[in-house]
Image (cartoon, rainbow, N blue to C red; front, top):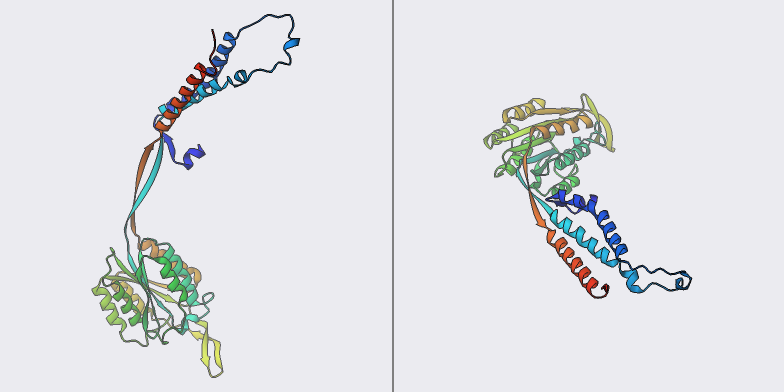
Amino acid sequence: MSFLNRYHILFAHPWFLLLLLLLPLLLWYFFYQDKRRAVVFRISSTEGLRHIRASWKARWRPLLHVLRSIAFVAFVIALARPQKTNVSETIDSEGIDIVLSMDISGSMLAEDFKPDRLEAAKDNALKFIDARPTDRIGLVIFSGESFTQCPITIDHNVLKEQLSQIKSGMLQDGTAIGDGLATAVDRLRDAKGKSRVVILMTDGVNNVGKVGPELALEIAKAYKVRVYTIGVGTEGEALSPVQTPYGIRKQMVPVQIDEELLKKIAKETGGNYYRATGNSRLENIYKEIDKLEKTSVEVNAYKHYGELFFWFAFTGVIALVAELALSLTVFRRLP
């Protein structure tokens, strides 16, 4: 059965296979008939015949029974109608267009997350991308300015490669939340998905940028983009690398996140605000967003059947013809 499953073979009329139980009875009948037809000579001693070898015809005569058995088995299988199946699937997906807008400012190197905020954010973003194979996802990064690291795409391998390459210091330092949101919304402006979503992550307070957060919020509302905001950072202080006259030193720095702004952006666009204070909490936030933004995927399976009975019927006919031809020629019995 494992062989049949492996090659997707099934039978349209499997009950005919029960006829194979008659095969032992047929073999017994064939050999019984041979025994009845055998000519018997009564002699006083077989000592003189002991060294006489049976002819090749006598040794190969059971071949007739083998051919008859092959024909019987082949015809029974043909009656059961073996079929090879081939299943094809089509996926109809109403994908969601998503842009990850990620803060990469110097403060994202704080070590209240392991190994730091930025690496933890990248790791969880990768898991989120893998969990949404049918969605188009893009990536925007920002600090003192914003940049589209990867336009929205269904090619998640490219997206993940671009995500893995981001690091703090790629852009002018600072926290331009308005620019990060405005750029993300701009990437979704012409998106055709059933819904448009931005996941904006930051660990600071807007202090620079060309577009103010309030204006970026109005743009998001105008284009009906739902925004989930995530504030990244522990409560109180966090160990962070700081530039000093003696070079970069790690110091405890107060964590300052403009939660009021992030809550407002999320509320007015129909999203949610989350506060991530550690790796596990950040992971759970991404899982919660994944559940909230479900994608409708419909899988249609089509099963195609290919008839195989002809080959078994043909095999049975060949075996039967061969048996008949040999019995009338090479293995012909004389009266």
